[in-house]
Image 1 (cartoon, rainbow, N blue to C red):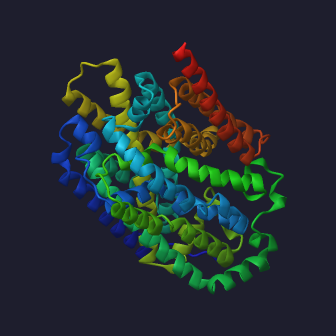
Image 2 (cartoon, rainbow, N blue to C red):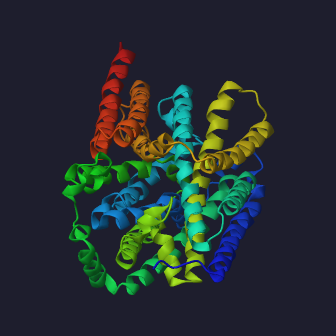
Image 3 (cartoon, rainbow, N blue to C red):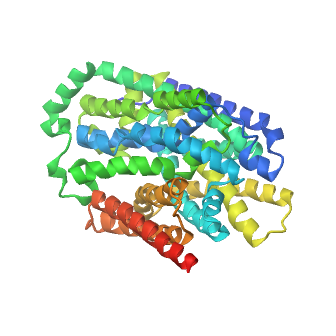
Length: 498
């Protein structure tokens, strides 16, 4: 029988969420003096150390999906779901820290770039490229934001038994306030606090959940008794459904590996964490890597929570209206009771709003800097700052409207493709360009157009009509973006020489 929420579950959820949001607002207002000009609002003083930067990066990397959605995947498919559910998480984020991070930090400084699209444009010496990158980022990130609010809403409703609209709306307003007031500096500090909170809460939940099922041996025994397929690393029986290819064969498995590597450096809210990083030593880099390695390993623990939910409650969650398997994490938290349940709720909110904050800051700052200022170059600094602050509030609230109005299925499909599109496009146009001297703006433009088109097509052919396998889609997008980027860069370079 599934556990039901109690008054103490509600009280502890409110208390921990108030503490988390209160700390976030406090650091936002403490950073106000460092955000009184537009450029200062965008990048702060650029003196953040490796610990704060590492925790902030963890917070933007571990979205509401990582703290709720992935548990539903392994609950549904068993161990075979782990490939898409975060087993590759460190394989993606650690290279971003150790290889791309220092390079990105130096390029931001050398090119005097204050936004990620501006850096992309500076690499190709083109404001048009920056504007195109800005448009793609905004379109895909807006779609991706919806999933963060859905994660927080699901966890709140299940654990507290109350309506989620008020909690989500208040959290969104709080997030908008500390970003609008504190800018990059306030947001970076808030993200660091949230990153620590996420890592501690989710790790604790996992350890206690695993203890409830008798450890790893007890977990696997319970899964095998339900269905031996649940303990298989890959399930051929899932190959009949194209959107489940990630759990069915080697093409899907390798595609998920590629997805985590590319989106770690392709997500602008991850990349932006290096804008404010001070010039670091090897010791600093080692510290930052260690911080990220420890805190960003949370998905591994969350996998065990999702599998423990399946061991404890078998297939009962599929009968829960609307949320179904996504209830895995919250239901385990309910079974453990207060204060763990409230701690977990705050962690899901931290994961959701930290990723949202990173995305919203990128969208509002970039749209103001890379598009509005391009079209209206004579705008005063005060006007630009106020415009960015207004856009911050707007981008914080738009996804809520979509969630409340129950967006159409196509939007949900595009959400799944947003990570594919962002990763494949900007792995080449940003990450590869840091090391390849042959990069040309023609290659960047064609790569962006191809990647965006494949994102939209994948939403239709993978999820709507089920004609493309998920792994085949990712590989087609990744390889096609690569061919477009390198081939058209060569063509553009030859034309310049002629």
